[in-house]
Image (cartoon, rainbow, N blue to C red):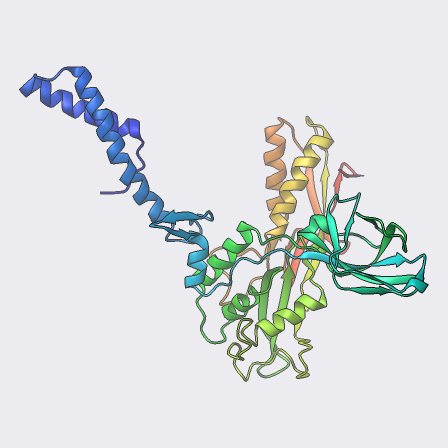
Length: 409
């Protein structure tokens, strides 16, 4: 019997029909009101294990497992994180607090006082509290003092020259201090969607001792990695080229910085938890120089696709532009290069077709009862009807022109 969704009313109606038919034709001793009450109780009793069985089945797979904590027999369990543990996926990354240095102007350096660790400052811009990281001698006219935000996340990040004020003003220095540099940017906790993707990737591609999928799995141990694209280096026997895409919330256009690239290289060589070199095969080369610079670990390239929609009628350019731009951005952000043996052969996403973008435009125009004449696209100034992503290449929407006018939100 196939598993079919049922609610309490479905079960109740089924029981009432069965009970009334049985009692009315044979027993006829119970009033109908009693039968209905009895059926309602039985339906409630039945539906509870039915729902529990359905919920339990969903927890078996990473794409449907719940990300919320549940208490079962006194044990607190997060089903998705538990699946991640079983498949060797590290815990969801926690957000970091912003750290930086501020320039404190000392009015009486001769006093040689010490600014105590934990001294509080506040930002009028963020409304958050910042604390001094370590005891610092106030023995000069200007002193660089390390501080950190007490709240983790991007909300506490400050730009250079931002002003912090001492919560309790000090007699020997100015109440205001300016941020001189950032030593660590604030980051958010890893999102459910990103962690779920990590678990799904590990679930579908189990480690095989150096296969293409392994490099992708190892790179996911580093917070901020969106995706990794591994290739054989045709110019070097045993060479492996890794192209890394960073989380778009942290890195502009998904292009990571050198620190993330180095961290990925380390994660593909050493176990982050133990430091044991038990990952890539010893013959695989991602660090040709041998000094942990990992020059074979590179950022992805991002190509801009410019789109031109002409002869738009029956719909305001602003309304069409807003919907079309959002849809095309989402479409292009989900394109990625094809890698034989790693990508899904039945669902290739390495091609950008003009017809696909025209289909998006047509759907939006239809919803507004409008129409358009033609859609063109180009990359690098060359008009094209299709574009195929190359090695380590991603794409994004460049400029959008509607009837020759650049659309700007």
